[in-house]
Length: 251
Image (cartoon, rainbow, N blue to C red; front, top):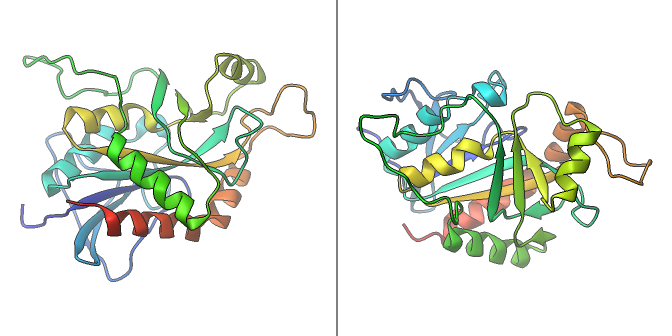
């Protein structure tokens, strides 16, 4: 390709732009078009490719995001690592809105999504252990602590189909299973990156308590407006964290 990048960034709900003075490019992949044009710009001495996961106008619901095209576009650009931000709900009282969670594992509760590049005739069975890159996770945690961000150093994210939020019964079940946060887009994104051999880290910004917490009637079920409000309040912090990770990443 004419264009190359060192690092890829996926923006979640509420993060639709990252850099100024960008060049937007159209990347055509064997798996169709990504969610939107990809913005290319320099941050320090590194070239960064940014893609809003849902599209700039949030036009792709979670189950319709072209995950395979999004990841393959980053592969075509030659990125050596991907930083992915997501808005997540908390399933535990100690994980509060405004906190950051650097996930280390996931549980998939989705269906019908294109979730592998090995649909045949070539077949491979990759490991699901450590879906998130340990080195990138450690770097993200270290920088969060340096910035004074309240960060949880690990967490299991349960990925639901969406676009609806959980019922109270579902949320209660997820909590009792010991899972930490809930999201609609981490699968198959992180496992597709692993298939392509691209180190991947998720930065979850906690925006809500899902359908509420059992025994605490003061905590209301999540709404879309509340998710975007909390994410927007923390947008600058999220961007600063991404910039600091990019600055320290070795590519």
